Length: 411
Ligand code: GAL
Image (cartoon, rainbow, N blue to C red; front, side, top):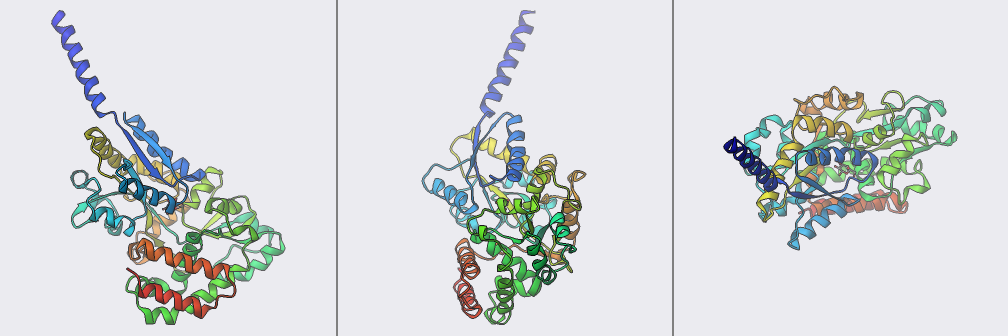
């Protein structure tokens, strides 16, 4: 009996010690602070905590703020355990500098390259044969969100194109509705501008301009985009100047505004407000006559740590984030599409299903410009388009000239 007891005691001690070794805190920096974003990031935190380690949440509002805080922390020798970035060139220096945990063994064990679709999502993290981050979702900018009640109150049908929206905007305004909801942050303005560019020029010309830096094509085609973009300004509201994206989305959620061009993270806001697509709002995949999805979204990278227990917990977190269960729960809350198509999407609403249908055809996929443009060039584009939006004295010619100059000097 005595030996049995000591064997049990030994086993328990071993288990405790093995559990004790694995219990680690992982500090995660992200910029998900809106209602929908919080609902989504809580899925990650809850699942990770339930596995025995601890998600230490560092939420910093604003993508640019969160990303620079992460870079500062790493440069300062006090790296977080994980951090959110957008897929693309935002973290190329961290890869080049060898500052990230190599996820290759995990990714190959779990077969990420076969599971993730489209392949361009993998290429954000799989660089020169090694995995340096885990993609967690696909967010598309190419959506407009329209309030059913607002258009009904104005006595007009939901818009079927940008020109149709512009034709109906006066009716929305007459009905006391803000026709076009937009917030004054430069990334919001340039994001919506980019959707208009895709709609007017098509995927091929857009790629030639932004990826191949075809300056002559930009000179020929961008005047029409800037001219059309200015037509939207008159339908925005005075409160736009300093409004964040989710407060802007809330204007559509509460039927105070007619339509917002915004990435499908907006869907998370409708979700937490209990709004139903097709009933309370419409998700218009853009361009309406040839819907596309852009492959934006989010990745998490894991700065190297000195503590083996933390490193083990980092690997566990990466594996959880891309697991079928967490992919389904997280993406349904976030409004994004999962990075793998073998997850249970029975919870998906009609907007998510629309996006999943569009993404099946590679011809409908617009690479996110963040794959081609550095963070610095993106910032210059954001500033230019925001300046053109706010300064009515800036001519189309001046805007195009600056746009071409930015492309010419793009690093
Ligand atoms: C994007 C990010 C989304 C969403 C949005 C607004 O860059 O990919 O997840 O959060 O910012 O914050």
